[in-house]
Length: 386
Image (cartoon, rainbow, N blue to C red; front, side):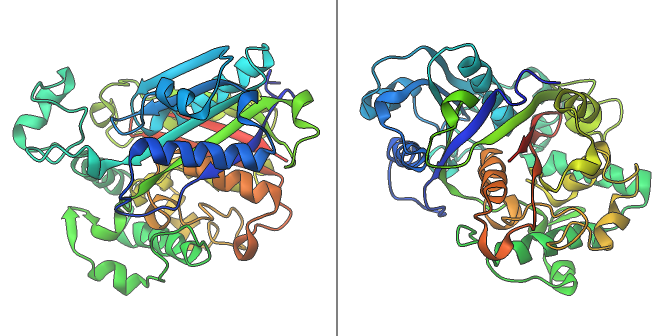
């Protein structure tokens, strides 16, 4: 069993409106999400003693946020971890460990996404990317492969070669996400998509079509974690953290060049995660799987034991991932409909579901949820329960 089981819980969530052009500063977005989470938990700002964040150049400095919120007693901080979605669940696990060890009463994990404010017009990438070429980029950037879509397309094609996966399989993932998005007021895309609509959408990087790619979003999210003892008398029912784990492929800095090109971070993670939580795949009632590209749901479904290797396409085709199916997936619409918030939105949706607050998209009798966040080769995951 995990040290987290019945020891730490998520007690507050907050988010801004998701847009595609916020018109406000990144700091304002962070403060709004944090204050909303504090209000959701029924706390006062002075009760927050620990803060953690991760960034790709758009999440503001943690210390500045602490100052404008008026935080005074800071016991544990994790300031602006450089990187994207792969650390979202990992940081929540670290915050949980901090509160269990009495490093502050309540910890807040926050993240801002605003790519438009940090775009490098020379290469179409974000502000953290400079003219220097990272070590692994010598194999792709000089040849024009300078976006995640390019690398993801190679991995998707490899999966098609290995398992006979078809574009229709990707399309059904998109269809399910968009249907769920229609039931979510936060979602940026709230229209249904047919398989014909999907197949008619333009190719972006073969075999990926425009509908296979995440929806650009601007916004912020915050999550508050505390020990179970402190969680008992707060405004919201505690959502317990059963397990938190990180994982990677055999070449964690070169995911698209791993020994097997189509491998995802989840390949080595599932078993450890379940062992820590003391549950198995059959105990999971819903899965909020980070989906920057549609095809990435397929290896995660297999690696976490919801179907056998190579059979995720059939699993999706059966309707299993839809609301009312065997395993509802990305009930908010995920990155393909709600908007890409780099992993933390999946946690928020899981908490909403486990609280029973999801309205028309509520999964009946939801007790255990799996969340993931990743960037191809590296990722992290949580198992939560009510």
